[in-house]
Length: 134
Image 1 (cartoon, rainbow, N blue to C red):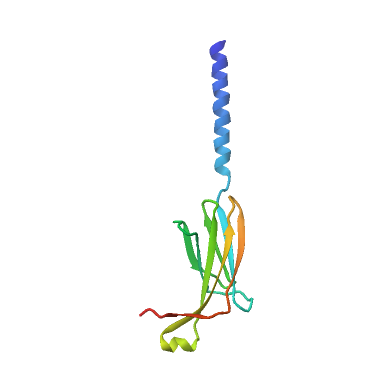
Image 2: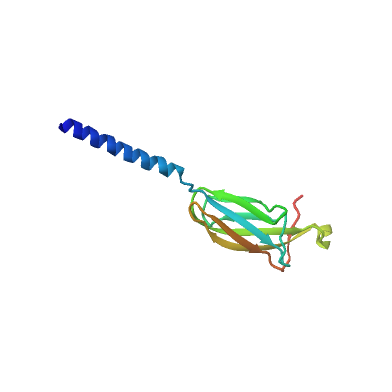
């Protein structure tokens, strides 16, 4: 009788643990991020470079916004990130002098486990320059 009781308790314990493990595997722990980049006029900015990262962190993502000014990405864990964006102005008079002209902006976002967060990055009006790579 004692062996049957121990066997039954063992089976029930194993079943409970198996169910707990099985259901936790179904949970979506991916954190999703949607970044919308707006130019100085407040309109969406297609083809803007987006860099997502944190100081000292090895987790990082880069890409470009689509035609709607949006960049979407996913991370495997929640975190706090800085979102930086840069948009080059292709038809600048400085291009002939070997300089690229751009506007930039940044924002911060906190990603939560299993959720989708949205953040907007507003590009500043101050135009900056950097040398063209040759």
